[in-house]
Length: 201
Ligand SMILES: Cc1cc2nc3c(=O)[nH]c(=O)nc-3n(C[C@H](O)[C@H](O)[C@H](O)COP(=O)(O)OP(=O)(O)OC[C@H]3O[C@@H](n4cnc5c(N)ncnc54)[C@H](O)[C@@H]3O)c2cc1C
Image 1: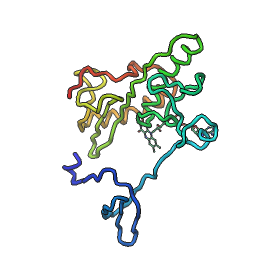
Image 2: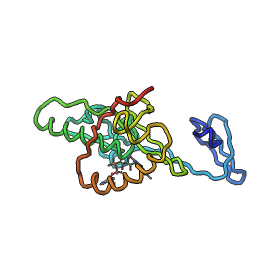
Image 3: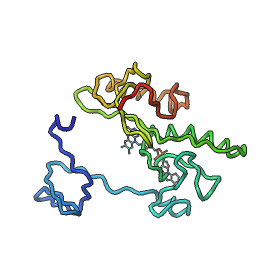
């Protein structure tokens, strides 16, 4: 898709210098490239308040078990979302999937029952690709995004790893779902785990 649009990707380009007048970017490993419009994302880290609290790691992320969401140092601490050190995407969809596991595990902890190692790193998101189309990707800790259909295996209506107008309309419709179902705490008929049915590699 990028090739079709004449977009090249320079991976692992850690910017060491921006030469504004010449419109050149240089990297620590000696590469350079020019630009017309520069949009940079600063190196990100955890929260100062987490770092100060003594709960976090050196970068201010809150370490938790990647499957149970329990802190390895403080058994009565569970965490989800952007604040954690989990190797999952920092995304609202992920925080939502984690919330189901976290709630179950807090109840298990309070009831003295074994925790469920149930969070699988599941993430999914629409990616607008322009011209009235969007992509949809769905993946977890173990499985890279695969082609297929979502949410109903074989049926869809959304296409994974493919640009489609239906995906774009799905993204627009999700706004309504977000405000009227998710924020109201209503159940969606979707499992928090990634399903492999209806996907192919
Ligand atoms: C521009 C943008 C676009 C995004 N688009 C998408 C998308 O399309 N799809 C998607 O899935 N995700 C998207 N995300 C990511 C998503 O918003 C986050 O992953 C998600 O909000 C994380 O939820 P959270 O509850 O962990 O953290 P947050 O939503 O950041 O909530 C943390 C809360 O804690 C509060 N807080 C912080 N410090 C303190 C303190 N010391 N005391 C008290 N309160 C405190 C903050 O004010 C905040 O309200 C986007 C993020 C950004 C920035």
